[in-house]
Length: 496
Image 1 (tube, rainbow, N blue to C red):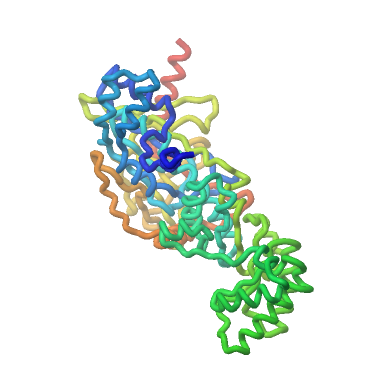
Image 2: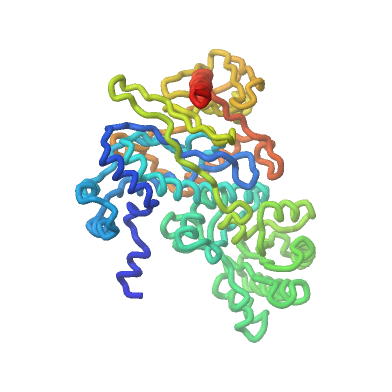
């Protein structure tokens, strides 16, 4: 493979990161101009891992993509070579740039099914083009952030390290997946490039091969401690954890102490075997030797369920290295986000005409209109009571009673007394007329702090790993009526 081919594999211009039908539809709109301004919503229908929530992530990538959206000369030449696009359409693409508006939910925010993660208001051909790339970025990164949040919740305050690069589905999944994992709560990653790109902590110890390359396990540990006295975590399961690994680690720790080295970040890592049993025995041995504060780290195909089980068994592990099952979200490898048309602007009145997609599957019936999300918090606890999807022009007051209801099981109603709740719109405008106006300068680690605060706004019943309480995502009365009327209208037309 020559250098030019390799450069193409790592393309930075992502304009052609799209499905072919987005471009063929664009040409169709170009050939049949309507000047339609439309609303598209990107949302998901079901929480990953049968959980009670998700974590929004990927907006930063979407912003960079939209900022750099253009068709290069090479792009145009490639599309021309396909012999399916006309010259006048290719000329249009050569001068293409995004001119629409975009609203999004900031990264690290807790989100729930059916509410827009991203709202695009733009000429229909522009809104259509960006569908695939937007979903690619939001779906993957939100999935990994959600999985990481679950793993960190299971760890109950212990540090969780993201160790998944070698098992990720390609470089981008490893890089941006690691960033998403850190945003959701991981204390760091083994991925050095992610560390460089996003200024997040990079962490790691050594491999079994390090031990095996020395004449003895003790000599390997000793050499490592000489090089990294202030970050000395020793992998103790190459030969025998309790008969060899831990005793040799203790020997090295004693020698370090005798040499006047202050033991701060030090401990052992176990990568195989019965982690509960081995960690308890190792802790006993370390404590009896005078090292009760040594870190006991574990890896070996961990996920939130195994960590929970190990905690229940009294495992003496206080640091977790989680790789494959996190970076691939192994038990739920796809987020399932979709991108649906919700409204078309009337060019004469300037009003948005709601549009709805109907399906025999109730969960696939879309919510029409130009919408926003109002989050309702319990004033006393700061916990989320519900999310209300409503029309953009609607307003609500904390000083008036609110009645909210389930849009599917409509008999389920809740009355919120004035003064007992607070309201917050959770979408922010990101682009206005093609220009980025979202000035979030937060670093990845600052977004992580935001995400941890967000997770604290959920009730434990919603965060539990198995059979969680599903947070209420309701529709305003006005939006519910519009949706009901459209469904009734569609039903009557089918009967004609």
